[in-house]
Amino acid sequence: MIRLFVGSFLADAQALGQELREFAGEIAVTKQVSFKAVPTANLHITYQFLGEVDDNQLATIKERLSKIACQIKAELPIAVTYDTLSAWPSPENARVFVAEPSIKPQALMAVGNLIRQNLQELVVIDLSLERNLVFKPHITLFRMKNLDSEPIYEMALQRFKPISQTIEFVDLIESKGRYSSIMTL
Picture 1 (cartoon, rainbow, N blue to C red):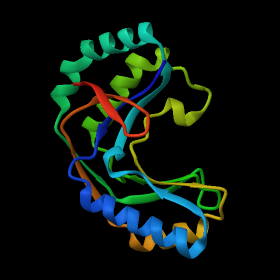
Picture 2: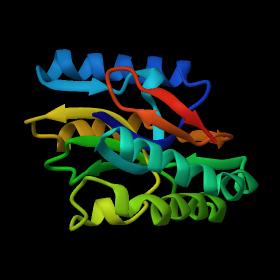
Picture 3: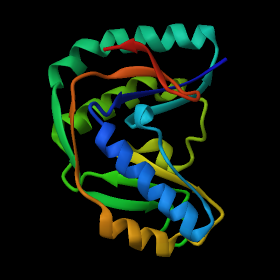
Picture 4: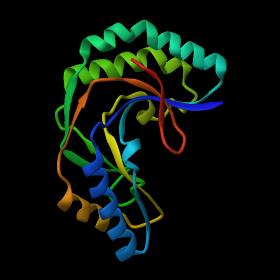
């Protein structure tokens, strides 16, 4: 079994990754909590989380992605600015802080929705949850556990700067430790 998602990595993210690590380190020390920045190499946007799949499912996923590759490539490159910092599921009980675009480019939504339409019946996740049904473009920046996240969210809001991304590729990505592309469209 292999854990997969379809996404696009954030290119040239070294400076952003350094800022995220520094902020996470400050929070961990001053608040004595488990608050971690997503590793720079793992910064990405997810179009569809697929979950754990076997070899047969993997072959079907690759085949479906190959069939829509031309449609996806026709929309690329896509410029996106993530200018809103959000706490999910809420500022008081956040598990993650994410950067979201306030303006969602039509091409981005078209790519995300096309991928979801073609793969959703193959996913092995709970489709009764809205977050698994609707494409909501975002980049996860921080993960946290069991803490009062609201004061940290307020601190993060003060330091947040918009993140720009030019999406040039869409990848089928293996989700383990350091994420790796197993197919590029």
